[in-house]
Length: 223
Image (cartoon, rainbow, N blue to C red; front, side, top):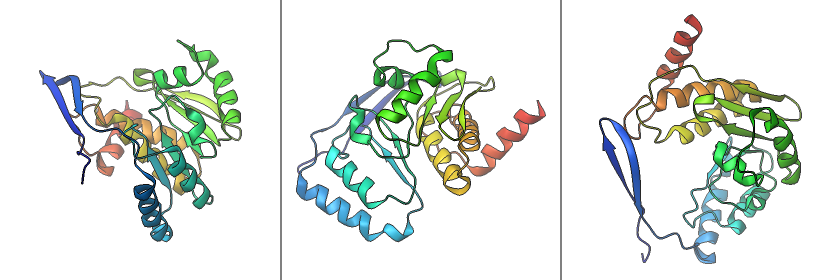
């Protein structure tokens, strides 16, 4: 009751977002709330096929809560969309999906060349006991790496960008769904890439439908 809900205000001009202003309380939750959260999550354990930890560094996903989730869900994929600098808190999850800037920060480099992504990704996955890493590269596409599928950069087809709001979340959601069903990292990365391409063509935060993703794939293949 004492915590305010995050309020995000977006400044948009000519259908393109310029900046976002957040009013929020990012104090880490206390153990009582953490206990209630993990109790609720565990009570619904049977209905989960995968877990996404979308960590916006707002105080909910504490290091302790993440560890408890990893411990209780060892048999299903756990994918993290990170926003903090301390990646050790994600040790033991399956995949971490940073964007390019976040990945550079994670490996303590100001700029990682495209041909060096595999080198740093290999060290990154070993260091934090991961299945792999997926890095969204903006207009350059997406890079994926794991020990079974190797690595690759999937390019993004040219398209109009109106608003990047929700593009990363869209990628993570679709990637997780496809990977959970197929266990195919390259395919999940590719379909996620198509879905985020649809998202940036929409103004504001908007849901991406299955039909829109299928249409994007068909139109791209046709081209």
